[in-house]
Length: 317
Image 1 (cartoon, helix red, strand yellow):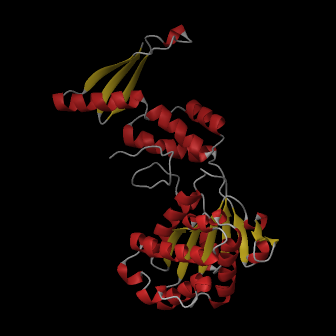
Image 2 (cartoon, one colour):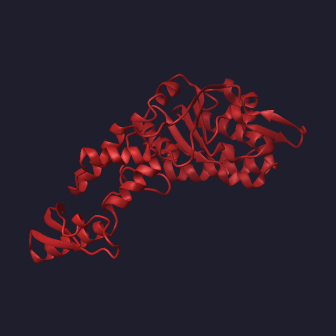
């Protein structure tokens, strides 16, 4: 399967073109080494989930830590029901550890034997950390989707366990969302008042964000496609892509998908496959447009391309 520009959900390096994690989350390794709890916030479709999942895999491969990514959004539905929210989040650990961790590093059944569910997340994490042979690094995604008492319960349990790290609580933790935690205004039904997120989680060391791609990173991303397919981009084209997208990751990938995986791309792949089966090295692909050309000079334009080692001449009509 060939790689492509992804515009839906997280990116994975074996499937999609990606900017390396080290170039976008370069501060996180130092914070993790220093046992810090920190926040990563940025608008949607900027690559937060993509980057932290890649970082989780990187940390696990290095072998110093046990690292796990958790999406807590399923607990949002329970709003003020902190007990149920705790149950849902603990079950997410069960699911995610099955997906990402080898059996010997997964929580034992004893970790799920919770005495008091209103404090269940803290008890679960304490038991698991005491079992693990290595420090635990956690990435809590979509933390700001939690509401009211559910959110307060999670934040206060994490704060209460903070002093037990790293032996009996996660060594380092990243809370991920659209907003910085200091901007949370949490309405507690039980206390009949708003509570500021920064107060409920005052152990935060830093708030990081993910910037848009710079021009060099856009060029690096598109160079991966050039290396894979032979389709080149001029410097002027790359400048225009950056100008129109301003480096916003989703827009950069959407433009790449439109430019490289449209009907032209499908036609090139089909023709290359046909040439291969016929034992030929050269073919012509004629593109007919139903739209009247804005510039008459584009009619009859010829462009030389390469696809899977076959030389293809594209003619625009």
